[in-house]
Image (cartoon, rainbow, N blue to C red; front, side, top):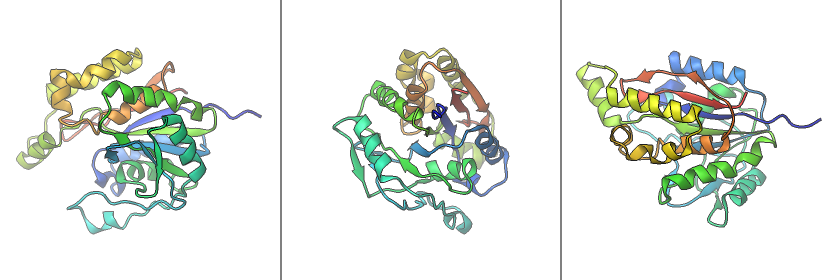
Length: 260
């Protein structure tokens, strides 16, 4: 019996607090997990492994990394004890080309575990991460996403974890002022990206961060680029949006599923 082709996900992960709160977003992640077939493994591209190089996590028991500060103690107590998969890490590195290496120096950061803990709450499938090389042009990240396509026919779920819009300075200012309102540059960019995803407009996705709304939505590219890995791996498939909406006025929580 052949292995069914896995869908591809992009998830807007938002605040680490979603990992311990019962809210609209954590409930959405739980429902999203119920839509998915059981994968053999997960490859996650998280905004929070943004470095000068392309690496995969080769740990047999990846550490749960609490890569944030100033949150309640219970958040630092969260552990996600998924196994790693050194063979899959090597396979993904080979798909990424000669620049890529397997690393033992990272684990599962909160861009991954704060979402995957709802998708697979029993931590019952291996999880590895793929880093984002901050030196590469935007279009190259789409190409690397396309290189992940073969994994889908091997039962591997590819996940990008970031946000379609991510301007933390604006979000924190809104929180401090108590005036949390959606802003046009974020809602317009979110709408433009959703249209481009539906139409598989790779050219727009590659240049979108350079637009006026794109620069406001992404002062840095770390939270945008995981979307391109998902879009590349899911290129040509039907697109749906199982979670939509904004947190703190300017953080799009849109999630994207490529394929049924």
